[in-house]
Image (cartoon, rainbow, N blue to C red; front, side, top):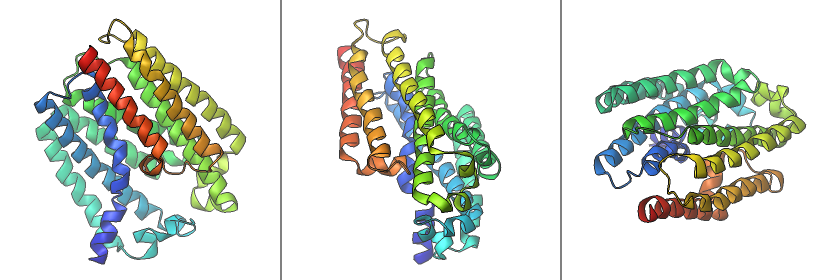
Length: 292
């Protein structure tokens, strides 16, 4: 049971919240009440979670020694010895062998996106994460691929490019915020945990975060009044304050509370963020599905 518990922990169920980006096309293409497309997206979400867990297993296998020097990651199952390397490696091989054939049956194009996501994340784990700026841009590309997968599964005829750009900017914002948190938390041990941190400093990251946070707000705002298929009265612009608060709240958590290391964990424990995201979702549903 200890090995099974360790395996589940290493698969990171809490981080599956990131895969929720696959539902964005379903929501904005007004197909939440379309049962076949809803089921397809739910299935895609599940398969994406299996592939994501594969990457987490491989990352932890590759980073065992570095994680032992991290104040919190040293307690993970692999570096702490709770989970054996053999079981972790076996799971990392079996999971994609299950997920990819099922994805092909669901939709061949979705399978191609899923395979591309897997290859991209493997490239990140073994090479791209060592290249300054490219490391975070690769993570952002993973979020965009999640959205692309959702577009394929719901047969979206026209998906606003502004949402792709807004997704990219938001992912960059979260990624650079995480790098900043790692620099501050690890301090002199930062390089031993993640070598790329030697290429960053707080001043650089603050400037980048300022740029991508502003770009996140701007691109979403442009979507709300320029994208096709939205209500002609521009009611979607009423959701902009929610987007503003999410960015400002996250900046507060980064700069004042010293958080930002794991965006998925923050959203699961920060009540104001949860309330704002839920309110944004309700507002979008009302505007797109009721007011039309």
